[in-house]
Each structure stands twice: as structure tokens, then as C-alpha cells.
Image (cartoon, rainbow, N blue to C red):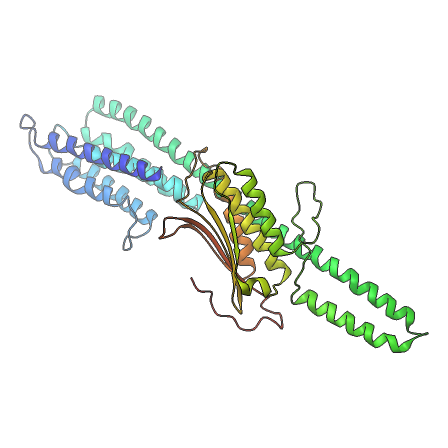
Length: 396
């Protein structure tokens, strides 16, 4: 969509410049140096201020520079001999595009206000170059309508971006709450067993003191496993009714998830679940397993929504420090249409937030083989865990 908008804007600027050139080279109109400036100086410079490049200054600085340049040309046109056309339509159109960009992209409200005010003043001053009452009245009317449209488009884009950022923040906040809730319920589940053992040790302390030490060892072992890693975990992915699911094993849960996805894709090849030998025999921290399950769940949901009928492969792999999971479908992701500024991509944003909260890495996009792949790499154990030594960055 944005590529189409860019092409349309470039075409409009090119056609506008052609109109300026035809007006300048019209032999029926008297020539003057002031006629060439909007066509070959201020107009092209204003257009060059529109795109962002590696060496260009900020959008605010470029906009203020173009506004000052246009205002200076207006002042010069008031003291030189009058010509038939000193306006420069390309310059005006570029100024309007800058107003839209400033309103849509500048974050600070104060900076946006005075930058747009400078651009609006420059546009409204252009009709003064005609130096006639009729030209001034007609020009002000046209400029006012054009400015109203530019401000309306810019404010709409700004509101759309504000809603998108707020939605992203809400998703990240909700994902952090979900992760905290997962960890809370997980610890509560295992701490219940520790409390039971501690109460049993206190009960037998007077009658069978020799049984206290084994009970204390069991408590220490259970506490260490809770903080460091457990083969089986409490998976507490909560549904809308806030009921926690039963404890589950990562491999069996992923296999069930993939099988359920295949049952829902009646006209597609069965999805495959692959797990390396290292992944099958390794232990991982509970929060890592919970996050990996969420990654696969969201990725399969996206495949079902955007690329139904494609072959899907879910792969789980591990090395001494990291757990890797990937979900790939056979062809590039086919994005379906949706409302502008809709919820597309917010699920992936939540997954990225969850994975990065565990010091992991997350990526989603087309790969060189023509597949669409969602991939996450998560440390097998928390950074502060005794079982979590210094880790290397996961291989790409």
C-alpha cells in the first residue's frame, strides 16, 4: 500500500513539474528571472526535502528550510518586475506534501505545531506573488482548500499512527502480564509441594527426628528444581475465563497442537512436527517451555488465517545453551486485506515482547527458500540460574 502511495506521489510531482516547465517556456508570456526560480530552484529543492536519506537532516529542519526558502522567494517577487506566472505549482505541491509528512510523522506536538505553522504561512503567502487583488483572493481560496485537505490527511494519518502505537503498547503490556501470571502460578504450584514437605518434617520432628534430614533434602531439591529447571511444568496459558490449564509436557503439548491444526486444515497436507534428539532429552525452564508453546500457537494461527492450505513444518531444536523453535509454511505469507490500521501483526509483537523478556531472539518473515518462517531462540535457563552459564548468541 505504501509503495503504491509513493508511486502516485512521484507521478503527481513529475506531472506538476511538466506543467511548470510548459508555463515557463511559453513564448506568449514575458520572461523574467523570477519565473525560473520556482521551476528550477525552489520547486526541485522542496521535492528533494520530502524523502529521508542517510545524509539528510531531520524532517523538521528540512521543512523549516523549505518554508523559509519559499517565503524569501515571495518577498523577492514583490520587488522585481511582475510576470504572468511566478507561483511554481511544484513548489506548492511539495509544501503540501511536507505538511502531511510533518503531521503524520513528527512525534512532538509542539514541534509539529510550529513547523506546520511555518509551512502553512509559506503556502498562504504564495498568492502575494501575483500582486493583484483578484489574484490574491482567488489564490487564497485555492490555497485554503488545498491546505485544509493536506491538514485533514496529515491529522488522519497521525491519529492512525497514534492508535497503532497504543495498540502495540497494550499488546506488550498484556503479554508481560500473561508472562508474570504464568510464572506466579508455576511457582505457586511447586511451592505447594514444598510447604507440604515442610509441614510433614515439622510433624515428625518430635517422634522421628531421623526423618527430618531427608525431608529437608527433598525440600531443597524441590526448591532448586523450581527455580532452575523442570522437565514437566505447569502450563498456565489462561483463556478468557481465566482458568489455568493442567500441567503439560512441551513435546506432547506441541504434538497435540500440531495435530489439532492438521485436523482443522482438511484440504491441506498434514502439518509436521520435528524435534531433534537433543530437544527430546534436554530440560528447560518452565517459562521457556511456556513461551515456546505460545510462539507455535500464534504462528499456526497466522498460517491458518493468512496461508490456508500450505504445508507447515514445526521444528524444535536445542543446543547446550538455547532452545530453538521454528514454524515454516511452504510458500511466502499471503497477507489478507484488512482495515487500515487494523490489528495485523499485533500477535507477533506480543510474542517478540515475551521472547525478549527472556533474553531471547525472535524473527518473522520470508526466508531465502521462499518460505515464511517464524523463529524464536530462547535461553534454556534464566540468566541468574546456577544452571544458566554464560551463553553465546544463538546462531542465525
